[in-house]
Image 1 (spheres, one colour):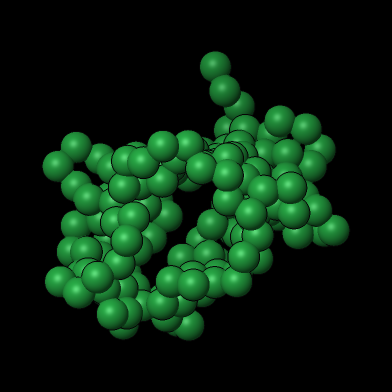
Image 2 (tube, one colour; image 1 turned 135 degrees about the horizontal axis):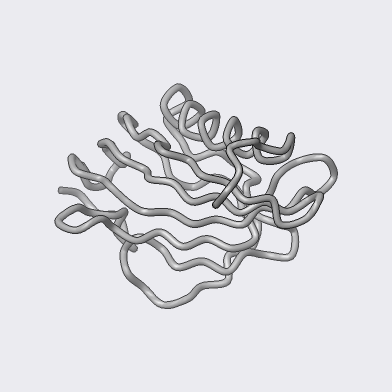
Length: 141
């Protein structure tokens, strides 16, 4: 049985995930500088193949963003590595792109601490049954 006691690092990741959604909600763009300097291995929510995502400037902008991280569970893997499993759910409108009124994904991410900041190293987003993820290319509705 898993312990309900969270490490400091786990609590930091829970706060970070909530802050990442809040950043997009208030700034109407994705949070920059979220990937490890070594890159991240990711399965995206549009269902594509495994990608290597290197650090890059934030590129996705929104007309509105109402997506929240929910039911966040964490596991400390090492002092500077934490895995998180959670749901992202809500709606958003990608600037010059689609409206996604039923975004809902299951997410697993592994974070590492680099220079005092948490960075994504592994990520897997999969849409919940009957729901949508973000598309791989953004075009008008």
